[in-house]
Amino acid sequence: MKDLSKLLSALNYEPGATLTDGQTKLLYDYFADPVDGDTEHTLISRLLAKYAEISYRFEEQNRLLTISEAKRREAEEIALLGSWEFDIESQTTSWSDTMYPILEYPPDTAPSSEAFMKKLHPDDLDTFTRFSDGQRGVGGQGSTRCRLLMDDGRVKWAQMRYITLYNSDGQPFSFHGTFQDITDTVIIEEQLKPNSEQLERQNRQLALSDAKRRKAEEIAMLVGNWSYDIEKRIITWSDTIYPIFEYSSDVDPSSAAIREKVHPDDQDEFPRLMDTMLREGGHGSARFRLLMDDGRVKWVQMRYNTVKEGDGQPVFVHGTFQDITESVLAEMQLKSYNESLEILVNDKVKEISASQIATIQALVKLAETRDDDTGSHIERTSQFCRLIAEKLMLAGLYSDIIDEEYVENIAMASPLHDIGKVGIPDAILLKPGRLNSAEFEVMKRHVRIGYETLSSVAKMYPENMFLTLGMEISRYHHEKWNGSGYTGGLAGDKIPLSARIMALSDMYDALRTKRVYKGAYSHKKAIGIIIGEKGTHFDPVIVDVFLRHHERFNAIYNGLTTKE
Image 1 (cartoon, rainbow, N blue to C red):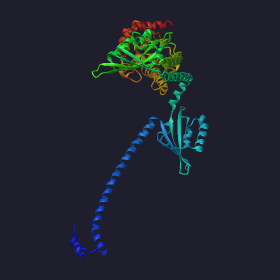
Image 2: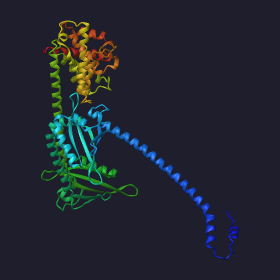
Image 3: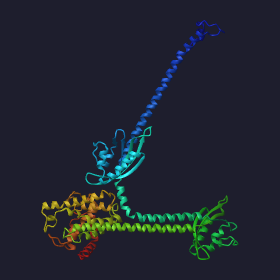
Image 4: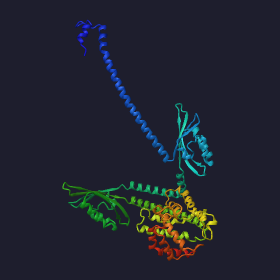
């Protein structure tokens, strides 16, 4: 701390005198230098702290932006969505990496309008050109659908959306947009299209019914109030009760008057309701019918609330009656419409399913005409597969796989097991004798041909169990339990259950049927051969089920064979 008295003495200051300008300046400078130094140090410290805080925020924002960008890219990939930009001034195009799988271009392809137009379906070129010209002329925002023609001939559907960006002068300088693969959506729309007109009519009827129900609820706002004194056993009600029960206004309120109007079919329920209300208290509601003097039936809603004393004993019950007849009728009509619609939909599903089955059977029959030995083979093996699957399900075996839907699907899918034989040359397929090793290698290809054929269809319907089982059966029904089958060499439960069921069904039918290289075996002999292959060719569990129900196998074979 400075000695002020010494400082003033050095300045020749006389006590009581006024400081001259020179003395004041020297005094100010003396104290200002250290003060300014302290202030500068404080400001620098604050600036450094502020800089550190801003730097942290900047780094955090960059981190969040990186995460956000990664999520955006992931979302685009999941949604088959690509983004693009067109610079009007430079006439250049840029797009995101997710555009490449949509257009099926390699990632080194330079983004350009020409590259996009090259993939556009020829039938959509004129329409898209008009849309593009309108986009550039009008600006704003919009969307359109178009088809893409892939190099292998496949057709994709895509949805393009865009928005125009303007500069400060109101002139457009850039288009930004997205491009999304909507092929699966369009396929579903086309499948549903034939039913749309019928569904629209049903929807209009449902909407009309719902409107009537709402109107009925609005109109039926006539509510009657009532109170019941539990101790005095006296009921009182409002004047609006009379038109609900259709009593004249000189009728005295009473429980007997209410019960007199209750429908005979609800007479037993009404006393139980009253007993619950008086004994348990609380609050609640119930619907019941009233039978009017002229035979009409009304529906009423009764609501109640119990008032209790301090000791918890109920003393009063207050409530309402409301005529809900129109509302109930509207609900019944709506329920009827819903049931009719459900029946219509179920019938349509059955019709489609029957059509699919008929088409499949026709295709299989077409393949069968190239192999005279098979006869009713596909019909019998279908019934065998259904029988085994049903018995496994009822026994609780493979319960994690088999349910009623599985049983139906394996019966429908089993005829596809040899669909791949359409790709086998006639010289081998129709050879009147055993195949040599080279010919047998060619014959083995039928499992791959069948699998690949069904797989190409299943890509459009990945959740379809029928196609999934068809692929499994076609590909693996010649595999063996010990791994010595073809062509994958699978063993044990690595072989799909559907293929293991088919393997036994196929073998039993082959043993029983006459072929060019062997005679028809008896049921007893076929059983002996299958027992001998238990645990080597066949799943032991499935063999056990077969042995418990072998008479059914014999009956199915004889029944369907006699039809030939």
